[in-house]
Length: 159
Ligand code: AMP
Image (cartoon, rainbow, N blue to C red; front, side, top):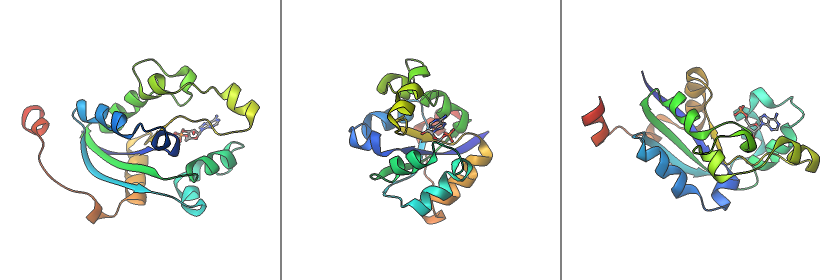
């Protein structure tokens, strides 16, 4: 039940100065940061990360958005981490994301607005969708030596 999830604070989140506030939420719930770095990805890497979306009509805007500045990449570990992180992140479309979620509290784009403007939806964050995807994404973004094993107080009191 202990899982690792890949989380990215996308360029819009970095540029809005939300790195600390977003990370704080994950730390507050007891998720353990086992990997973290700032990366400015190129188009080739974007295609690998978003392989499932490359043929979709919104992909050109998505690629433009994810390569427009650095992202903060994290590996978060914890009980049911993949589901827990997705719940905290909220729905993909910020307009539909519930208050209390990261997207619901910090963003307001709708598909109607971004489609009309021909831009990518700015939803601050990427989080692995399921455990299989998480394992593949962690391996894509982080080498073994870039992740760390240490004990937190949550491990002492929860596990
Ligand atoms: P997902 O793999 O479902 O998390 O989607 C990856 C990213 O693709 C999302 O965070 C959005 O930035 C973008 N995206 C997904 N679905 C749509 C859509 N229907 N229209 C525009 N962008 C989308």
